[in-house]
Length: 205
Image 1 (tube, helix red, strand yellow):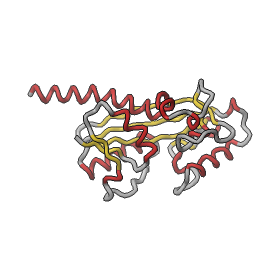
Image 2 (cartoon, one colour; image 1 turned 90 degrees about the vertical axis):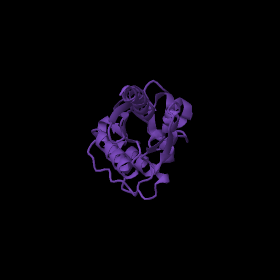
Image 3 (cartoon, helix red, strand yellow; image 1 turned 45 degrees about the horizontal axis):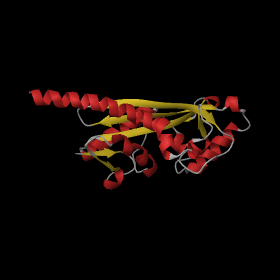
Image 4 (cartoon, helix red, strand yellow; image 1 turned 90 degrees about the horizontal axis):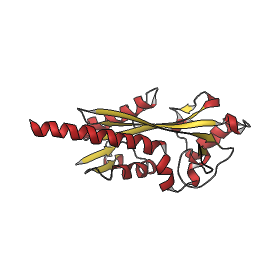
């Protein structure tokens, strides 16, 4: 069985794939479907955007589809960049552009005023079933980037209870606590129960 992960982002894909190792499915990225162009994320919430992507890709491919949307919410900025995290500094923003703007906006705020959280909403759509789960990691924004791993805002996000930023952690250690792993981990648990129940009903009819 084939499923689609609604992303071209290889960094994101590498975090999602291992979480479905126990599913008898082949996960394909959008690179396998060149007919699918850019998907406009017109939602005002992470959940809306995750479902927009999952529904659209499923409608084109006919395959069960996984999607997510992630936002970095900084308290002193009123929750920004939030749903605009990937496009914080403009439609063609790079990771470095977004980090630079975030640090500029935070200026000289002291550590206690730099609290933030990463939030991921994961979605599954297959035409007859829709499931949505969430993962959150609390932490703070450092004054400057640290580490060369990870992607996005990882170099300036220090998770609560840790001395390293996500970018300083090994990918394995980040995966243990990351917002995306928590969201998709919850989705895996939900789908394991739901799909198993559906298969049992089908077998009994």
